[in-house]
Length: 237
Length: 320
Image (cartoon, rainbow over all chains, first blue to last red; front, side, top):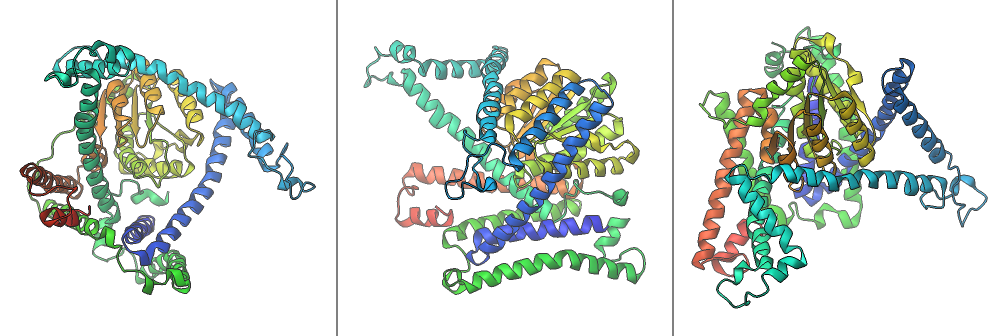
């Protein structure tokens, strides 16, 4: 029971304070205090996360489960970056305190940690990100199959938007005079209409629905109606 | 039984236990109240922040506060009506009706279910919504005895997800099948997290993948890999820029408000379903205002960019 009552009380209190802080200048500092608490809790949770990462991967290695080599690489990388960062190995000496090792800078690319970030983590992340180009193509290939009326509309819209973004799109409809009654057929105008009218109205509808949904979810959580994240009878187990 | 006792203030056990509970709550809330009081004192001590120099309410947000109050009243009213047995009809959501089918398929195939609660922390409302959806999904997985894996990119989300899944196993009557090792933290780094999860998808081939939360560039990387391994994919996010990717690559997608209503829909509880109906009432009011605004603008009576007469009145009440 305690495990259900206290979290709901804390959640409700925090939620109400954040609402008050947004609307009342008197309580702005209260909101900042709640955010500070969150950051402290998240910091403590990070220790739990790192501990869990080590435990899960060490278990995988010790039991020689499939993929244990990946776990070994994860642990070696994790420990290497942790040691380099914590002990400031290869830090750039500080201008003000050149003799004090721990005053060194580890943010620049000249430091070991910076080198790891700029020349290892950065390129690896960019590699994953670049895969997106191929996935966009494969997803578009499936989505743009003209199976029914909706997909035909989608295909037609995508065709206009893609073509209007190229020089060919402008060139194709260049003969249409700007003051002609059919000037709206120029690709750049069709694109403007689609993005500024059709797309904007759709996005706003989703935005309004999202805002209302957030309000309803917040009410359910603050009032303790939605308790799906809390243990029930066996909470003490 | 326990819940009913709490509502009526009749705590199980003796008065001593009730006293202990009160003391425990006070012990936990005490530091919170103390910190708040200190914050208030600091605000009062600083001349620039003195409450006397500031209005009680931010004048530019009064209209928003009024509308928020109206909307909250409508939602709470709908909850109360539902609690009293008012017959509300909730539109069926195919994406949520498919949850049972997806988990059942995973059970039959002997494969796992993957749930990704986005890449943001618990201070993002989408992550909160994702974790609330995780509850019913985990309960179904526990009932079917399917293996549910939840890799997270934030430590705090891992802690919240573990508590949620544990609660789901208890409510399903299967506490013995709960394995906290299946809910684990990977990394905060966006694409490192993506590579770890995608690698797991390719190796383990989960039969059902749920993407519920805040997603950015990684949405299509997840969804396309899930598609390539033949998993049933159900996504939900409020990020408008990522919705097209999920719609293109997933079997079902919860768009915006559907995502926030998902946990209420899946719970089947009258109170929670009432809040969904409340959302509909609010939408009705908003739609009415939009239609009124369009009619007035078309008739030339009031426009947002005008600052006289009726235009000024509408701008004021709408907080413009």
